[in-house]
Image (cartoon, rainbow, N blue to C red):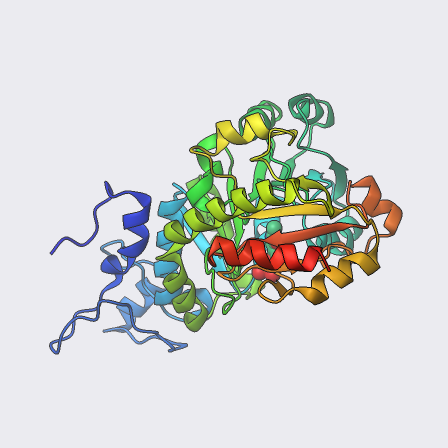
Length: 406
Ligand SMILES: Cc1ncc(COP(=O)(O)O)c(C=O)c1O
């Protein structure tokens, strides 16, 4: 039986990743990798244990000594994500935030270095830079990196690290990955991109010249709202050693249980993304015609500033599953009234789950900002974020309609 075929399409690959991790037992070989809960590993001899501390057997296979340094379930997920993102390797973490921190440290953020980061980053990512990097001497420049002149901004700022998100939250702005990586290479900056909203099914930033791609696997990759995790995938072997060391020292490893759940989710990523995307396209079209809605932020719409760029980066009419819209009544009371009336869509934070999730940025992702700061980012008081799930489209539309009419 074939172990693994690298010519398979991504959809097929993700379903059959366990093949390369199968343990063979006389009683039969499990088709799904068992959960390896062991924290420590014995080897045939001290010589073999000594070798295993390097992380590899003499044949080049993964070798385990202690779960914080790596475990078979996390390894299977790491191999799958590295292949999916077309990277040379990946490390998984206990959360997306842990992955971001490890990626930034690996990119070289120490005292005296300069990072050019997107002002639209996920709130806690900016919080991390402000609470831990700036006090330690890192210069942080926050700019809108989803503008046509982004290449000129990078050449002018001459940063050591560029850090952004493929698709921004909550206004769903798209970054011109090719222009950014080209300019970053010119000035010698390492590029780090959080691609949580896009997933490797829609965009693979390493193929556009990025160095490190980060995911909160809590979202689409896991996809069922039942496991928290993160991952960093590298395009360069030279960054992998540091990344592994940093992961080990930071101690924020993904547990075998969460790795198992994330692998289970990953198998249906392609199927789920197709449905998320087609549902989101229909929801965006519906909301943009709704009398209670002021405007919709989603790149499927010709009115979206990066509609053409999105069409170039993400093929075949897919634009992701996350959108935001603004109520005509631009105030918190109207938003709460709408959210309290929802019967199917869940008024809860997070995104990328099979069920539709509605959140209010001033209450969740942009909670720590003032009203003025949010308005400066383009987030008005009537702005609502919707992570479109994979339920039947008619049920989603009916629920939104009845809540909007309330
Ligand atoms: C774009 C993005 N990156 C990172 C994170 C952090 O991920 P986690 O909650 O798994 O730490 C989030 C969480 O919502 C996110 O939306």
